[in-house]
Length: 602
Ligand code: GCB
Image (cartoon, rainbow, N blue to C red; front, side, top):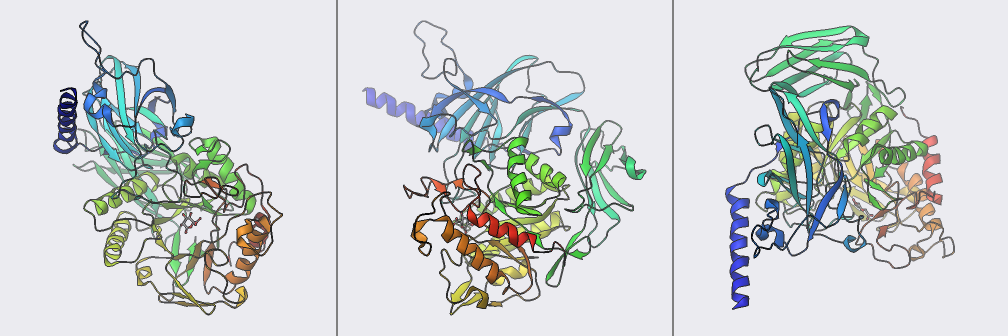
């Protein structure tokens, strides 16, 4: 009898939940631009949590937060009396038992709000990994899928005067049709991993803008401003006081105003990362940003920054603070990683394999570091499954939406190491076209690693490269692929000619301080073996025709649950030039010397 009752409750619960998730699909809105410059009430700090490995909270309807009223009432959940976690922050690193947890955690935060007339209010999340169902005062606001980009809900009509409660169901279970899919070589940090803010705006406000130099121009700015709200037709202005620019225009019925003006800019470059204070103004709103101007283009096999060939002295970085073994989130986390990149002699970072925090992109730009922005279309993506292409589109749009005014970002990277198939080709060509349509000013690439090796020759055969501005290839000669002759004698052939070539990954593993094993055996995991890989790679790089950039894999050792060697890995991918404590391995010095001897521009 008892079993029967439980079964009925479970079935009812599943029905209620699936009703919510299928009939009532409300997706988050795309986030407004430049949130940190707006009137925000920050909701970071301690959030109460319920750990829900069985997914029971779905049918118990945790978001309703019911309390016993009669003496016979009871509810088998409560936020009160339970633990609290820090937001922003991943949940895996906040409780030992959750180290490898992939499942649901419910978060709750209460806040007071006194609404003002003619104001609108939005609940904005910097990122939640991976699924978020967001409730306000017991009602579903909507859902968001994707762990690394911002989203928001307008709550003007649902927020109460006085006390309010937000409940978020966060779930980081891997999905076959997820992006990334089931398998990936980084740590699946779940949780509300970036800032949460209440953003207050006027009734009509500037929700978005895009200003960058027109392609091939060093002086002409093209772009647009978008207003949101009832007062769509307004006088709109863009001011750059330092340049005495005061561009005036009017928005149309849809709230859109086109922007076009010219100036003699001091161009942004790694050597001089000049940013201007730019004021966007309409009759009901003003927002300030710091924006730089530079041009980026390809000409035959060269990448031109501000019209001059540039060599991308890059490094791959995961968004992790190694000292805390946790997802990085703060500006000081970003500063640790970017300062190391600078010290190595880099002028560019590849932010692998997903959009990193906005503060990382902004700091890189300030420090004169170019950025490669990427979405997590990584290895095992099920391109033929329904919905997958839509998710790719959404993630690409959310990345471009957020970062399109950052002149430091010069590359949109739309995938990494996907397996060749007609479905993949179709999906990636589509995605590339859509991305180019959204932003024609930057270089677009996808990283491929299916080149073929034989007799010391490398055949880069994949015709998909035709659709991209840069040929980005990952090669692990000396590690996954043994050298087949002298590194300096490697012969290359490319199916696509006349395009810039970038080696987007190379390297091998070593445990810092492990200097005892045989130098010539990979299984020694020694610093010397890794050092030799880098010495050989430096020789090999001379054989790559039209090489325009190099990105060693990677800056710092990082957590990855698939790396199981008990002596050398212990859950860490050891391909870092730095250890998980920031110690420099021997290979660091080889790469640093290579960058010192390589010109930025040639
Ligand atoms: C790759 C992947 C990167 C991996 C790396 C490795 O090719 O792009 O995400 O982590 O290899 O360490 O094997």
